[in-house]
Length: 68
Image (tube, rainbow, N blue to C red; front, side):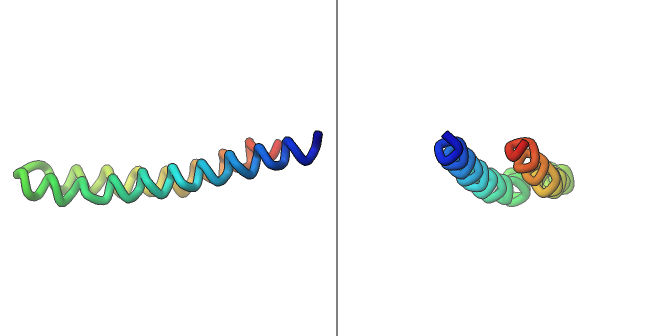
């Protein structure tokens, strides 16, 4: 039973890392699109920075919760 739980945790950890990678890459285009379409570039940049910082904080917390 312990091996099965560990393998599920490993799969979840891998899926979380993949999701974080996809989301951060997608958000990096936001300031470029805002610039091209005459949007608020400063706000778009702040959104990218805020979400990047949140990912740095939230992912370790999720990993700790998952290991409990």
